Length: 355
Image (cartoon, rainbow, N blue to C red):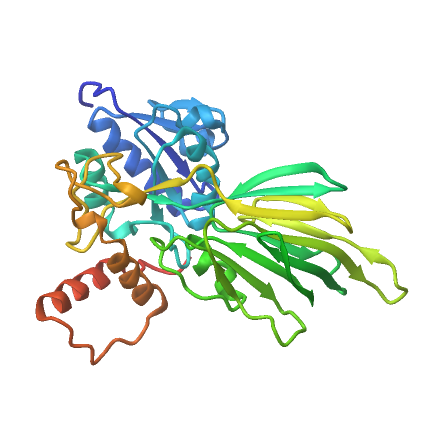
């Protein structure tokens, strides 16, 4: 093990998967060899069995002062880690062992290179927009929470239709009988909102999405509104066969929940604090900005303050879409050098396997 470098990184692992535990041990070993202090969560320590690791409870303190949170698992594991990293202002980098992995940056087959670039500080950081969510009942605030991907208002009773009214900037938009409604960020546009028929929005676009779920109405398409707008949904209730009313349930990123009785109001606005995602690749294949270097609005910059290769979020996301969904691009010509670069990036992005 090298001399202590004074650097520290938090490791968050999906310990329910043996391959994730194995990958986590490899990453931890390489970090310790480089003199980096490895932190692990108390709930994961027994499974990881890292003798040199600093064990901390799963709280904001675990990520405070850490250079990065390294996440081994799928997007669900990264969303769990974001609860620790966001309040600490620490960037996350995910190693994808899940199915699609839009949030995760790298795959196990290029893990060695990924750890090398993390240790060398050759990565950039994206600011991902979040949403703040407030629940009111009879004018009083009953819950506050946040989301990176989406906040959904869903019917609580499977056999009943949810009756609700949506609102944009203090004005009523439409009343729907539906299964629910999704309020999503651009980052969440490839998650639940996409499954509900919403558009794919590139992550560097600033906007809020409102997507009804199976609404029984002619006007019930997905909507994209200003990031400064305030969206709301008021729960009228779900009507049963005898006319009784049942409420709804709020879910944020599939992790944080709150009950919504009839009359409850959910308000969604742009989050006050973003989530930071570390990126190793940009238009030139790898980001070159140092740790934590971000430009205005989240654009990555090099040490001279100019936008570097890691700033090309759009191109990287396009390649990610093509690779993750296996989109047909045969016949595309483009510019010769761009075509070669894109082909190389798609090969790098191909999932290592289904899990």
